[in-house]
Length: 266
Image 1 (spheres, helix red, strand yellow):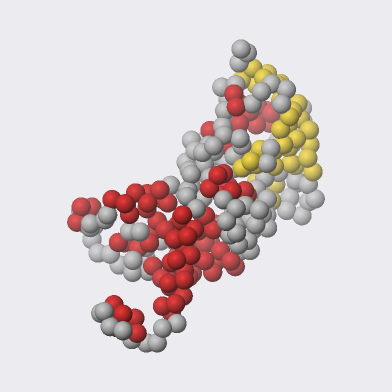
Image 2 (cartoon, helix red, strand yellow):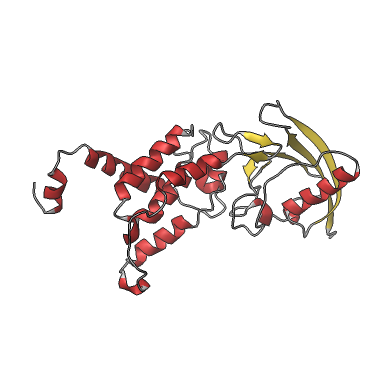
């Protein structure tokens, strides 16, 4: 079996946010099957530069499946055909020689294309800024074992914290919803003692920011979990909805009612 392959790529090229954009066909030959998809794009860009053409712009950073910057849509699948794999960790042995691929950026109104395969994902940053942190005074550092956390909650929090914020869930969703991303960030802190003081404010603020950024609503297609490179569960969306509804209900209670409930009163 040869460790080289030839591909035909239909790559989305767009000079800037106001440019109409179009697909451009490239033949890429003698690609090592041991390369990652991004390394293949590097080779293509080197050849384009040698021919005096503009290289293809694409996001990348760690190239270790950690940062989430590398996302592109390959033949309609965010990050490509392999499950739980980022584009930078997708190896060319996943494809067959002679295959024709379509490579395009995330498609969402909240992710405007900046150039070629690069989109502006700062909307996700603003959701985090709305409440995805612990801002209260927590005193000096304490030993980890001094704060008891149920094993089940610790595991669920860790699973939610695995979200790398790549935006694949948005790209995969027919509604371009950021519910899985937002839910992972809300769940992570809602499950831990350190996140309790700001729990209600966090849920309301982050969901409001998500809606304000122009993302669509979740209608339970499940494509987000299927395309997530870290396998974040849609159970987190259910948890986010519960957190939001509880916080919204609490904010409408008469003054003092919450204290009575906490004390076991009616």
